[in-house]
Structures are given as structure tokens and as C-alpha cells.
Length: 361
Image 1: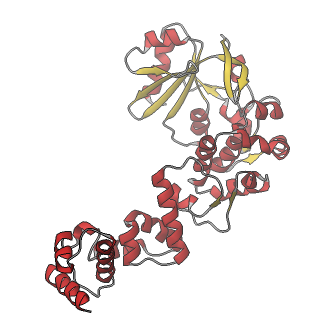
Image 2: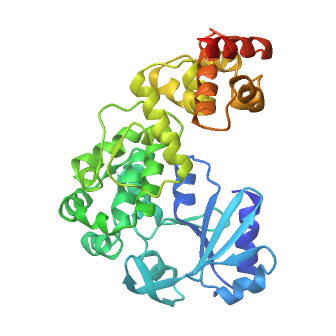
Image 3: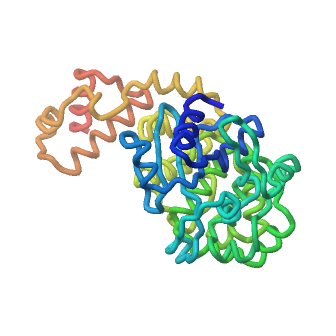
């Protein structure tokens, strides 16, 4: 265990409270996976934590406590019970004093194993057995837990994907019967879970689950073949979607442009000029086009933007005796295309000569 994490646990214990690592960090530790996201549960109240960590911390809306130390993102949460939910958000909680009561509120057994600062494991729900058996199993009544928070349906599939685990029979049964609950989630939350599935090399397992459970159809998503790329826009570009999953304007532009390139099946000077290097490199990976070749094409471009054009707007307008207009935009686009096709040199004298000849014709 890293000294940074051990010191946080020790500080809480030295103040007279219990403190345990819990959740994904412990699960990943047992699987030999390094994680920088750390969850700590404790019977210390938020006010106590503020006294212990006054300068480098902040609270979230649920009374949780967050520390950022070097590369670690540490969330500290007081033992609690959620009494009421409204649209998957706990609207009423009470702080409690027993670790056992806090553990049973968690979602999956594999995320409910605890560890103290001496690296002693506390397993109250047979989570280690499920980790060893590579199985995703829900704590409590599965149907009730899904109704309580439908995001758990996608989380179950996500964990099965990234850990290459299997869903237990009860989870499979309840997802099949209650998959439509996913439709109550915001597109932002859906996208966050889908992104984590799509960016993992085992993405196909997750997509297969989503397809088998009719969740993809529910979400308006379909796909044929997908080539893995470590770029979320590249992965979404290979899906057909009928909904906007809270994409940013830039993401939408990138997805559209990547789709256009892979639809055409090739990369050339015009595409590199129009869409830029990043989009073309993502598309090249999908199309199995050598990325070094694409980089060379881009570096050898005779012109990369209108700013590189060796003739000014005023010079063009003077030669053609025109004012700023669509004609000016069209002639510049024509010149750029000819330069990209290597039919015209990007030199002021040659560009002027071309415009004069064009005018005479």
C-alpha cells in the first residue's frame, strides 16, 4: 500500500475513528491492478474530517469528502444508510456507526471488500470468492436494487466488460425483466457508462451484453463491425445512434468527420486539409491505413489552412475587380483544391497568373 494512502488511514484512526479502504481500489488491489481512485469509509462524521484535513479537501453534496494528493483521488465517506431515493439520488440519509451496516448498502460484492492500513482484508459479503470466481453478484434483492438505481444495470455490464467477469444468473434474469429502467437515466449518465465500455479493449463483451438485453435498441444504438481504437469519438463514429448522448459540439464534429472518412474508405490531401490530422489518424486506424503514411501525407501538404495561401483577399479582388462576396470564397476554394491536387503551386506569382488567365477565359 502506498504511504500516502496509509497516512490518510492512520490520521483518521489517530483521531479515534475507524477507517477502511473499500470498493474498486481494494478489488483492483486483489486483482493486481494499479488504481489511483481510492475510496475510504469511516465512522468519522464530515465535520470531523474537515478538522483532520482542513486545507486540501472539499465536501460533495452527499456529505462525502474528497482529497487530491499527488496522483491520488481519495473519497472519504461516513458510514451511512440511504432511506429514500428520488430518480436514483438518495434524498434522505442517516449516518451510522457500524461498518457492517454500511457495507450492505453497496452495489456489488466485488466492490464491498475492505482493507485496513495493515493490509488486512475484511470480507463481510463473500466478495473475495466472487472475485476469484470472476463473477458479478449484487448485494441484496437484485430487482429492488435496480429499481432503486437503474444505473446499476449499466454498471454491472461495465464491470463484467472491463474485468472480463460474468454476470450471475440473478442479475441476468432481472436485467432481462427490467432493462427498460435504463430509459429513466439521463443521456449524460448513460454516455459516461458507455464511454467506459467502449474505451476498453474488451468492449465487444459489453456491447454483446447490451445487445442481448435489448438495451442497445432501447437506447437507439446499433452497430455492425467495430474496430477498436483508443479514442472515444472513433468508437462512437462506428455506432449508429438516433439520440444525442450529450456530445459536445467538438465531439459531434469529430464523429461526423470520422464517419465520412471511413465511409469513403481512403485518406487524401483534401481530407487532411478539411478535417485535420487527428481525425484522419483515428479514421486511418479504423481503416487499417498506416499511420506513419498519414503523418507523412499531412507533413507534405502544400497548404494546411487558408492562412497559408500565398495571395491576399485584396490581391484577388483587385485582379478580378470584385468586392468581398461568394465569388471571392469560391475562387479561394478553387485555388486551394488545385494546390492540394498538385495542379497549382502555392506561389504568389503563379496564383496571380492563374487568376488572370481564369478571368480572361
